[in-house]
Image 1 (cartoon, rainbow, N blue to C red):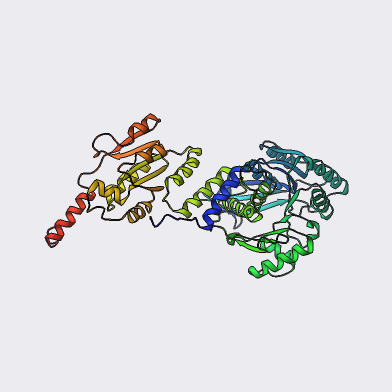
Image 2: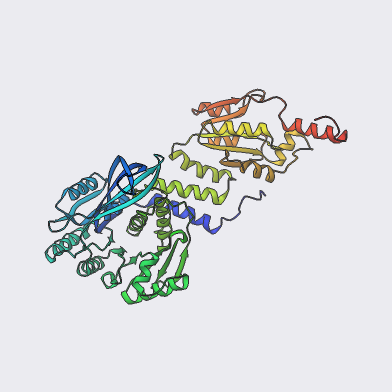
Length: 524
């Protein structure tokens, strides 16, 4: 049995498959999103000199961008995930407010009728000044905020609650994004949560940095980071015991079902209060990433949690809270690898999950496993390339062939003859290396995406199952290329690669034997 083939998937491999199926099969969740809607400005410029007037950088502006921020960023993320969003909040009667409405209105599935205009406050805006070192490396130099943190007027608050209650008839889940700008004050927040509870809707909260958690009482899930957790619980947060103690205190004090503590590179900690069948507290690790900008990561996580918590699922069981957080971790991880608050699509997250699964399983596949993976590659319009051989003693000719093959498309499959098949073709003294070792060597090459072993004398069966877009062989092949007729009949092509004479396993073996028999003293 090929040593890299796993009879049973490891736990993380099973989880990857499960997360992929969940994300593929969740419907268009309808989300009521309440919170602080903002407008983010980005001013980019080349920073090449210091001012002669003062020791400050001179920025030569080359580009300006505006994006929805705060709860607006969550709305953009939900839209990218395929959800439908009802936006509820307050903006100012100003140019920023009008621009924010325009930016949100063009997003698929986003309803902005619930954005109230407050003439007594400006639209919260954040302007980031971005310097480009050597015209390409982005570095935030300064942020300029325009905001008012006072609570909404009672009259405007009543209008917000009225519109929220009307939206409950048309939503599956409620998300609250609180940046402490006055929309989700104690009165409004509790009115929203109680109305949602009465309507049987889950409420997920991304809280403000505050000790006032009474406003969040009764939420289904709350998502503080470790600093916010410590502030709310009134204690130092310095490791897993403190995560559990603080989360347990908040859950009991404020009737919270789940608390998800985001821990940056350490992943997340999920605490649950009610379900005896699940772990009380569970650390959910995440893959280490190169952090480019943390802006928007929390918004992306909230969007993913909302999508899943209120979603309907076709052909797959609904996710557990832990599975929701795992997927939110992946989405937030992709966000930090980008600059600024950037919506991550469902396809991009699926692509990341498939890459992670590929890395967990290695490159070897059974035929059934290969066909399953190829179905995803076909959906991405990837061009599939196939080649085969014994690959007994890897040499430069093989390397050249495989690099040539990968250049013909996006995904390279290499089929390797089994030991029995090699003996049938080459004689009883071959192969020199067992199939396990040959597959391991081929799989270690960057150009190769998948390795499969076949026991027949030809790969015809695999070629018909895979139906590659491109079939590769060397020009030393005599006669018709195996599988050529099938591939061309199904719209593919056969490409022959010129080979350098003398570079073959047979010649290498002959040279070794000759030198061994002569004592290895001949000129090199």
